[in-house]
Amino acid sequence: MHTVHELERIASQVRRDIIRMIHDAKSGHPGGSLGCTDLLVALYFDILNHNPGDFSMDGIDEDIFVLSNGHISPAFYSVLARSGYFQLKELSTFRKINTRLQGHPSTNEGLPGIRIATGSLGQGLSVAIGVALAKKLNGDDSIVYCLLGDGELQEGQIWEAAMFAADKKLDNIIVIVDYNGQQIDGPVKDVINLGDLRAKWEAFDWQVFEMNGNNIKDILETIGTVKEEIGNRKPLVILMKTEMGQGVNFMMGSHLWHGVAPDDEQTRVALSQLEETIGDY
Image (tube, rainbow, N blue to C red; front, side, top):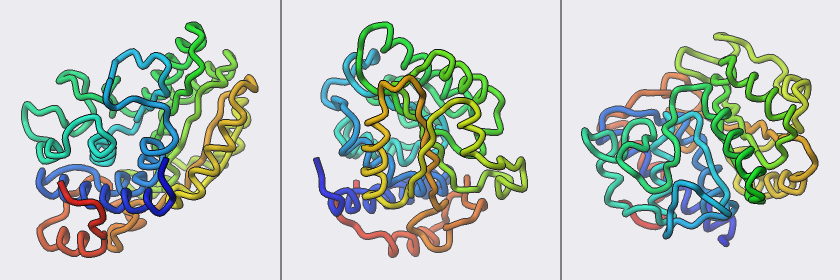
């Protein structure tokens, strides 16, 4: 267990990793990665019941996390490495040919911590629901977590999966929607307006919560509250408000940093805003 301050220090370091990885690769997705850093740090360093030192694909008696919006892999890889799944130095291979750290998480090269190839948007929730159902059938009381992007909710498969989970009363799954209001082509409301998301999920018979995804204290408290609802025969979803590009002032709140690598000067400025707290890789 870590204190909120300790988790914040880890998050600052992860954000430095994200900037450096994407700059060195000259490609990647900084905006959403920076925005979801606090959640991933809270999950892997405090919330999840998991075993980085003895990774197995089946995940029996462990909590499972599915990153549906796989393009934010820089944040995911950094958190996996820093929580002990593989060596930190491997972060320097991000998006290089024939390495394990591909632009979107892949199972092909056997990277510890990755159980499903993701990034084809709209599919991760179906996978997570399948895992949750399997755990139910196997008498495994662990929890399945799934992170979705808000633009991803424009995919019809999401709502088919949502109907299925509610119909099967899968109350061992916690879905988190990264609600930053931005996607690759602009503000979500200007591409396909999602309307009242709370009302939509409630209409699909999910229990809905909200939290500030850039406040680690709120993340810990909210997910703690949500976990108390496990077993109440309803799937659970958290609408998580974040800021795209959180921590780097010229990236914050802009869809333009969805999938653009910073140049040398932008990287220097970004790193100057992010404290090195536990050591760069």
